[in-house]
Image 1: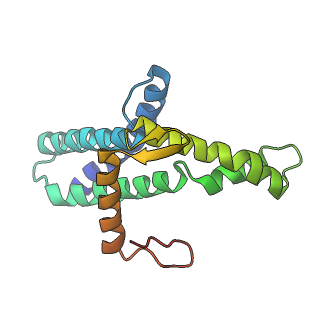
Image 2: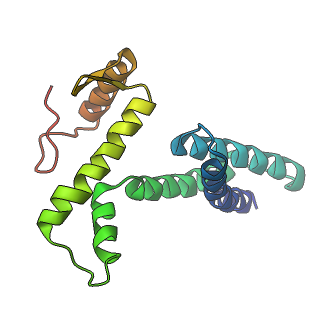
Length: 168
């Protein structure tokens, strides 16, 4: 029964997480999407544990937590794969056209710069870079974040592959 509690909490998370994302956009909350996922995970995990304690006579926390964690991580991985994906935005731009095709030059000259300008806007809004004349300068927070990301990339062995090269 503890596994079912974990599954129920995961289903609740899968309902709450997108609802929070929609509410955040509608009400212009300042929480980022990843923070909203974390809030949804904490709330639904807590509710699941409370439900388990009150409903299941021999509640096994780790059984419930393992199912919950597995399902939530699957959701988070799927979310991360489509969240702000430049490749998927290009695909959607092609598919949304009536003829379902676009010349490469148009994608490169119009769609890609707009996508990257949005990304730069996110970095500025997040306080990681700041505009300086026609350049951007990393803030102290940006340098700290870049250092941490670099450490994580090295820890996970990411880099120097055919797709990414994150040299020091």
